Length: 265
Image (tube, rainbow, N blue to C red; front, side, top):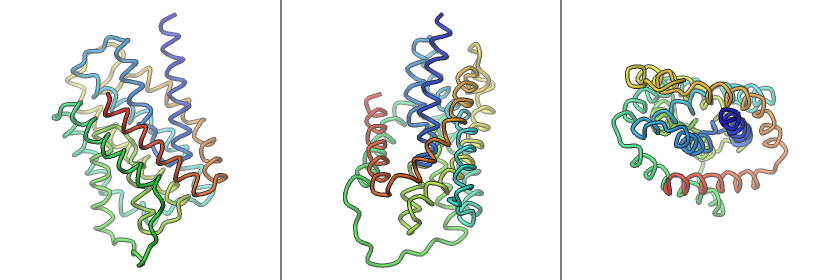
């Protein structure tokens, strides 16, 4: 009975994560992480490994739903691969750096720091958009790689797909919101894939809890991955139906709520 309730909870997390991946171009970690931590409390997982296990599981479970979101946005010609390609190098390096730092720093410090960051970023989207006085050109290869390095480092540290930062960065350089979301979904796939691989490798020697492999809790990974994969296209449909202003407000509210959740703990 208890295992059944646990699975139902993972199904709900998967639906929310998949919808957010398709709708906002984010990996869904802002929902997955707090829900997994709550679940792990009931599973009596040791606090010393709880946050790392939640981050690793979140990244792993985002691989398939971000892939589904990427495919759906690509079918609607919403992915700018000329931007994705130069950012891939920064994603790989940043994922390793982020996973390594996360293993060293206390989890509560990471939660509060990035929670504040999410709130500030969310408020930016909720406030009226400032008029652009001059055109900002897209950075070159090394500029985009550097941006991806920073975004991937922070995203991997906190188990999110990077859309929280990639979408506003892309819109800053005048990429239309819907194409920014589609392009972000491609970057989220790369971040979640490489980040999950590094968390798995770094946690093999440190985790001996049942149903875990590295810093990944296998039951949650399987259920969330499957459910989110099929839920992501629903979010994509909404993303291409809703006006840009509504998308900005939804994105801002999600960021603020996620930030407050991480600060409160």
